[in-house]
Amino acid sequence: MQIKIYFILLLGFTILSCDEDSKVETEIAKVEVDFTIERFDKAFYEATPKYLPKLKRAYPFFFSKHEPDSIVVERMNDTLQNEILREVDMAFKDIQNTKQELVSLFQYLKYYDKVFSTPRVITLINNVQYRDNVIVTDSIVLVALDNYLGENHRFYVDGNIPVYLAKNFKKEQIVVDLADAYAKKYAFQSKRKALLEEMIYFGKLLYFKDVVIPFKTDAEKMGYTESEIKWAEANESQIWSYLIEKELLYSTDPKLPNRFIADAPFTKFYLELDNESPGRLGQYIGWQIVKAYAENSGDDLMKIMQTEPEEIFRKSKFKPKK
Image 1 (cartoon, helix red, strand yellow):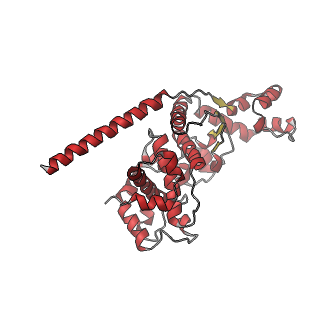
Image 2 (cartoon, one colour):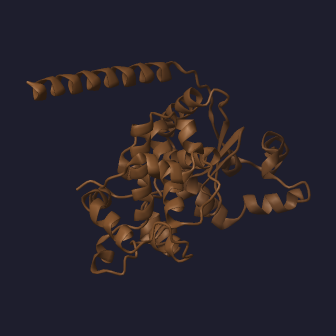
Image 3 (spheres, one colour):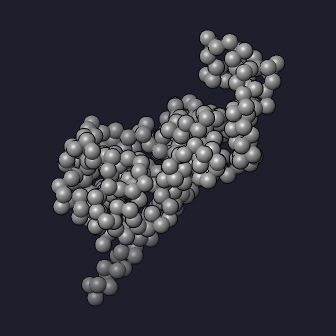
């Protein structure tokens, strides 16, 4: 009888939770977002020297006051620049799917941050400087489209960009990268020295994506393939046991972030399973800790982003999936 009552109560709580989630989604869908994607890349590609003054007035932040127009004209005629611009133009003739995902992102950001205002969204090229693929400020978002041409594009293959990085150079990851950039603006913690502190910092960034881009898969949020996210899920307990047994959580060894946090083809346990594993598994475990904390604490997104890692870890009562 007691078991029956327990399941009835559990079902009731589940229904209430789903109903509450549905109300939030309805409210978010009502949030007004108005912007156009400004194609500076396309405008520059199609511009003639005669049009240059107008282009500079519209986008003054892309031009140095100390740079003569003759240098800009040279850039307009540069063979490599025009090749990149042509490839981007072909790949992004239709940008509506990307815009719709950005609309959703901005709606969620406006809902959770009442002072957030919709920024200008401007696309450009940056000669495949993939570390700066997106830039976010309070009023402007810049997206370098030449970093999203598809993982097998010749620019990346010929440029010897590692496969584990290039696999995310696709247009579906634009909104993920922007969500990550915004997460870094909201995240705070006073210390990031111990491995656990680093793990939870990146766990916050991933949890932020859970909330503001729920339409993306866990694999996309992590920048993993589906097989990599399944590997992480299946081996969560083993990863956690290794970190505990080796007493790594509170270690400040400067080599640990490179082994468990940084972009890499695999995570460095120094075991046979290394070659099977995806990189950044420290981030993945940090994500699970922050999700457990969010579930147990009931704190809202912005509070979680500001909470210190020790409190998150202690109150998360984290237990890995078996």
